[in-house]
Image 1 (cartoon, helix red, strand yellow):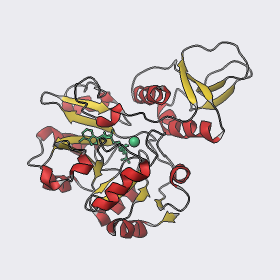
Image 2 (image 1 turned 45 degrees about the vertical axis):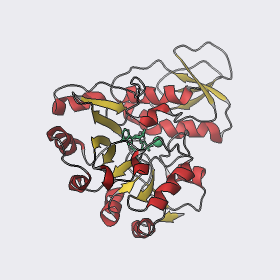
Image 3 (image 1 turned 30 degrees about the horizontal axis):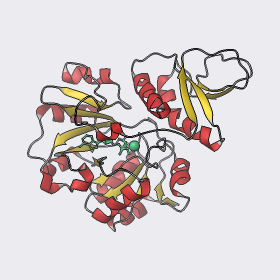
Length: 311
Ligand code: TXA
Ligand code: MG
């Protein structure tokens, strides 16, 4: 059920959960100040309680109330990349944010989205928690139809069209020495160099005894279809291939095109839609063309595909 921004704001302010468009992926929103709605998000998604939520705000000054102070570099990153697909993790005053939201950590994650509708909504509601609007473990939703496929046609959705980025925000964390990327996403690592003076390294969460990005531990982005990443294709017929539209594949194969490799943003934009389409079509197994470079946004695409293909 599509709702207007005013209807969405009313629903959220009265403790309901609403699916909301953002520029990255659709989010399942609840007010930060409605514990029962936050609880409902975990239930609806079947999300592990150990996986914390990102707090979305309309303005960086709204973050100050939750922290003792924000570092100079936090503010520099905020100024350069917000509103936009970046999430920053910082230490917070724990009594200000429920343990459920931060999964018991002493930090919380914040983001200012750039989609005009999301910003308009946030100005009406105040801080909203928003995990991606998909069942836990499944590919994220990048259109209202994807949300409806997971939560039913009666679920309230603030329709902002198809998400421009199509990949989740990039999450950064300061490890006491430097900023590191704890989840790759719509902004590539290199983009942060001019602001930080270095390219943040990618720590995908599981290296440390305690993961710094709990979400990285869980199965993610995976369709029902079994995916296998391959560098070469044999000349067999009837292969189902997730590939690129500017490549030639063996005659007789069925190709699900991610887009042209020469336009990496398009590939990120289409990724979840293609993974979801495999399930709509009842595909049991598909080969994924893994012969593509690992720079820029394509590094994030490969990370998602590896996760989607993992057991
Ligand atoms: O683009 C996005 O970030 C989307 C849209 C809706 O804003 N949201 C999103 O939320 O991707 P979700 O819940 O699917 O992923 C949030 C990730 C999880 O991997 C979680 O573990 C991590 O953020 N996270 C949240 N709080 C954290 C914290 N305090 N420390 C480390 N990681 C945190
Ligand atoms: Mg997610």
